[in-house]
Length: 289
Image (cartoon, rainbow, N blue to C red; front, side, top):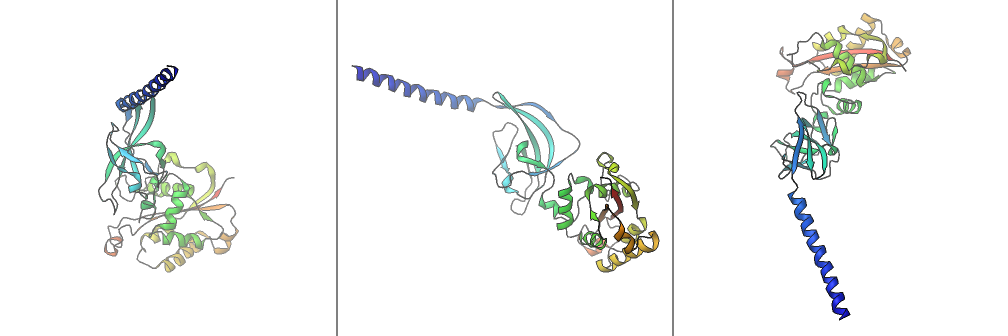
């Protein structure tokens, strides 16, 4: 009798646990994602996948249907359209509604909601290797430096920087130069660098010098070889501004701000024509420690 009673208790416990699991799963399944709040700003900040190899889904707002995965676009820059707080059960989380552009493997663009922890602010290699990115789209120095390194149009930038001794190209001073030279452009000009005054780090520099004669030359010589252009730039610096090779070599703590936009279409008939989209900004300045 004791054995039967014990067996009955054990079976009862097993049945209770099984029913509890089923009830728990049913309860979880019935817990829907609800929108607590959602904001749709006018700006469209950029992001890339924080974990490119992690299979992260893009969901619909109800979190019931997948629109694709971030792993489908490992080198893609996403734009954020909205920020939404979703509640699931007793927990809340912030999601971004992002636009994922098309790729060769996945030509159709798609949109979806992704938990913000799966994204990181900045640009992916699809843009960093592209022909042109406006300065205003960069949010950090590393992305800017990678663009200068990988973009097929930035060979002239690399060559000019290499010709100037003891100075490095920086994101901060390039922002300042681009903003200064961009003031003369109208807001509707497609060549506008899009730099906001709020991101300028002017307090970090002194003795900033701009070189409009250099930029004027560059603007009329994009069909000339890089070697000849660099040579001419050095001549203008020496003859018109007094910055000879000897003087440049003596400068201490100076940085370069250089933003060159040209040959953005990759077609000579367009990029060398009178209506080509071009922009140039050039300055040097002493960093304040």
